[in-house]
Image (tube, one colour):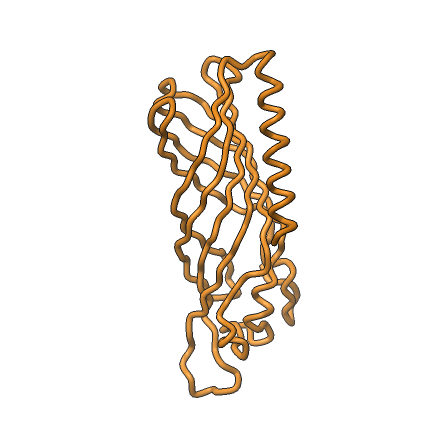
Length: 204
C-alpha cells in the first residue's frame, strides 16, 4: 500500500504543476482545496451476494478556470470503503451463512471537467478516475469460509481484487467560491474481480 500511496502523491503533484503552468496562458484563477466526505460502495456481480457498505474519503484538489463557464478539477482522494459478501463455513455445514465484511483502502486520481451553471455556486462535473488499491482486508476468523454460490472461491481468494481500476465519475457541486458541497457518483469500467479464478473462468 505504501508504494501505491507514493505513486498517487507523485501523480497529484504532477497534475498540480500542470494546472499552475497553464494558468499563465488561459486561467484567471487556480484554487487549492481540501475535501472530506462519506461514501457508499458496492460491487455489482451475479456470482456473489454482495451488500453495500459505508466508508469515508479525504483528499486534495486544484480547481482552475479554462473558459468563462468551464473549470478543470484535478484531485487525489484517499478512501476506505466497506462492503460485505455472504459466505459459509466449509468445515461446519450446520453453521448458517454469514456476512463477511471487507475493507478496501484506495488512492484515487481524477480529472473532472466542471461546467459552471451558476458561476461559483452551482456546477456539473464529469471525468475519468484511476483507482489504486491494496488487497482487501477482512477478519481472519473467516479464513475457512467460502463465497456462497461459488464454493471454489475462498474468502481470501475474493480479497485478491485487481489493484488498478479505471472509473468514470460525475456529479454536482453547490456552494460558494471558497466552500462547496459536492456529490459524486463513480462507476467502475474495469472488472475489479478479474484476478479471481473459478471453475468456469474469472469472476465478473
